[in-house]
Amino acid sequence: MKIATIIARILLGLIFVVFGSNIFLHFIPMPPPPPTLAGDFSKALFLSHYLHVVALFQIVGGLILLIGRFVPLGLVLLSPVIVNIDLVHILMDPSGLPMAAFVSILAIFLVWRYRDAFAGLLRA
Image 1: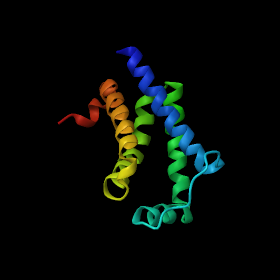
Image 2: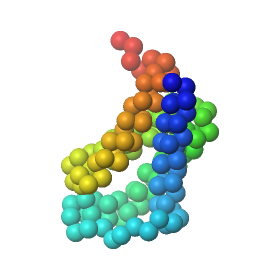
Image 3: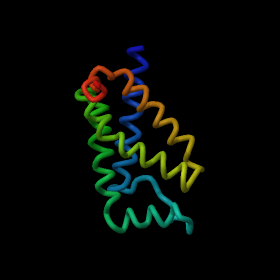
Image 4: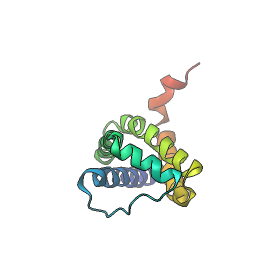
């Protein structure tokens, strides 16, 4: 189970570092936003520079996961981003749902593996 945890941590960290960095560096070509509600939403995020803040959280959280130190902090930083990714793909753009589900499964697995660090939040 320890190897699965390391693999999940590295995969999730890489996903967020690569795609977060792409917001700033543009090394993965992105097509123009489609004329849909999801396109309008992503255009608003980009034009308001809100997407840059989200990308910063992605990079920092992803790097924390890659380093392997303070992993629960990295998961806390990435959790709101993952929830928003899920909601966008559930409500506006179902084509990205498989990747969003994969990221969510990795994050849930890691939260479960590091559940002792979150015990204080769940105490009654």
